[in-house]
Each structure stands twice: as structure tokens, then as C-alpha cells.
Length: 207
Image (cartoon, rainbow, N blue to C red):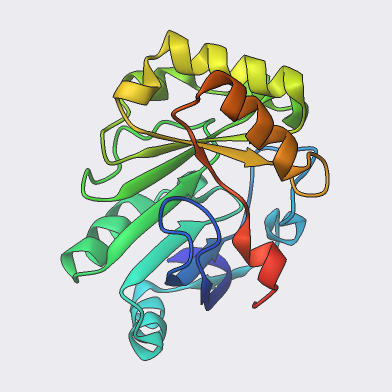
């Protein structure tokens, strides 16, 4: 059983999978309160659904790419075996997690998108940085940048954990807070190896 906020198909708007059709399984409940959160409706409520129904729903949607998101999906104890079951069924699985909980038990075949909270989120003190010591080559680490301080802070984290050599790194300008061209300008100045991660779904509003 999982507590679900919503299940829907849309364009994947973030990560290196941006632009692809994706079915999203949004779990309910979150342990953080980020300053720029755009899914406050998933902090609570939701409906408890059994795994069989979820599989029936995503089978009907016929999209091979699945993203598990929230809220914070790792708060739910049944999510780890559910991820493995999805992978065993042949789905490509992305799991977006907020960086405050351990990723060590996630099936290594899944693509973890680890959202490291910057100071601008007001949640940077909640980060479980040992996650960055076990990050895998197929994983992606995302930094949502609100200003220059966030950008420089993120560069320090990347350097401390040698992330450019160990996984994919995403820089995302906080929507309606930091203009994308400002972030691009800093990246050009630094010849950054990060990938610009604009939230495509917000610009096309296809959900």
C-alpha cells in the first residue's frame, strides 16, 4: 500500500530525461518545507492505494518511463520494494528525492535524482550529505539555484564530493525567482560541466 497524491502522464520537464513522455506517481507527505515548493498540495492528504491498482493504472497509460516523486517518496516504507517491482516489470524508473533521507537501499537499476537543497530553499541544514558519498554514475544530482550565493554554495558541494566525475549534475534556476539567462551567464564564465535544468513542464503547462 502506498499513499498517493496523483498519477498522471505528462512531459518529463526535468533531468536528462527532459522532453520525454513520462508517467508520474506522486506520493503524498513531505518532511521538508522548501521556500519555493510548487507541490504543497502533496504535503498531506492523498489516498492509500494498493500496488495492484497502481500497476493496473500505469499499464493502461502505456508509458515505459515512470517517475516516482512527491512530496518525499522515501518516507513511505513500501516504496523500496515497489521500485524493484517496477524495474522487474520492465519500466525505466526515476525516483526524485529531496536529499534528506538515505538512498542506500534503492535498487541500483533505478535512476536517483537527488535534489540537494541550497540555502535559498531554507532547508539546506536538513541534507544527508553521506548520500553524495554513495552516489552512482547513473544518478543525477540537482541543485535549485535562487541566487549567486546558492550557485557558489553548489559549486563548493560539487568540488567537495567530486561530483562532475561521479554522476550527472543539474543546475535548475528557481522558477520565477532566478532568470535562466543569469544562471547560464555564471555557467559560461565558469565553463561549468553542469547541465542547465529548466522546468520545461512549467513553460508548456501541459498537465
